[in-house]
Image (tube, rainbow, N blue to C red; front, side, top):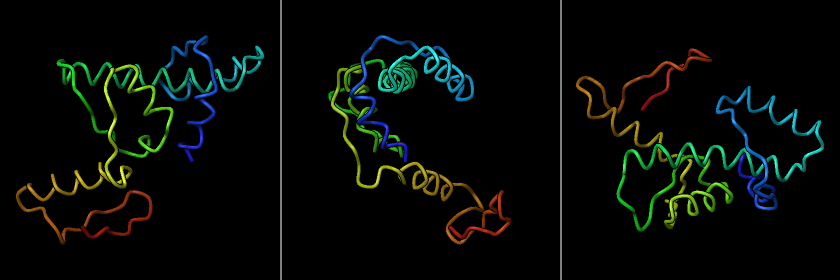
Amino acid sequence: MQHDFGPIALKGKDKIKISSLCAVLAESEGIGLLKRNEAVEDIVYAVHLSAVKEIAGMYKRMSPSKQIQTHLVDAGALNIAMRKLIENELDTRVVLPNNPQIAVALGALIRMSWSPGVGLGTSLTASTSGEPYRV
């Protein structure tokens, strides 16, 4: 699971820069770093830091004033390195809701219930199986 990489990242040093935001290109960059015998921990740290810098940039554009704390949701919230790096980058405390990995889905369901003609009991068709989801 993705949160298993957090402890590995925390062992890394900030000496590598990952320039690719695209997962495929970042993977290629990581493979190249492995071939150059860079430490796995340093590569994993660099991948985390690259993502955190992107997240922090978006956060600062949306909320330019300093926050005392911020809430982190989605499965990445379970990753200890993501939490610690975001706290460092934003100079704030990260708070996790219960079950942060479902917060985005719950928010989408709540938002969907505000739409005219859409609400609980509506079927959504899954793109993979064709089976409808009931919400």
